[in-house]
Image (cartoon, rainbow, N blue to C red):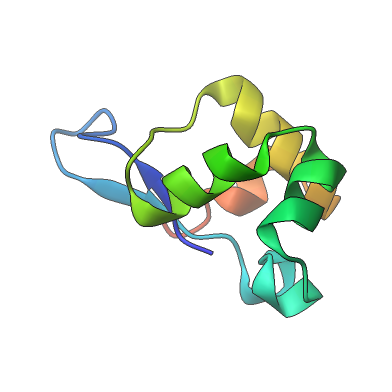
Length: 80
């Protein structure tokens, strides 16, 4: 799953938030509905984020990290 940090993320350049392969929704065989249930985020919002139609709020990033059972910092690895 690629999570778009909309527009720019602090440095003026578009960025994406790409969780490690082992923490992606697909690697867990989760549907968007299952991801929503695990994270407490509505599945349509997850779909919108994956398509780049919506931006993630910090609260949503926190919920995703809890669903994946990883620290938030893991979700940001590799982003300058």
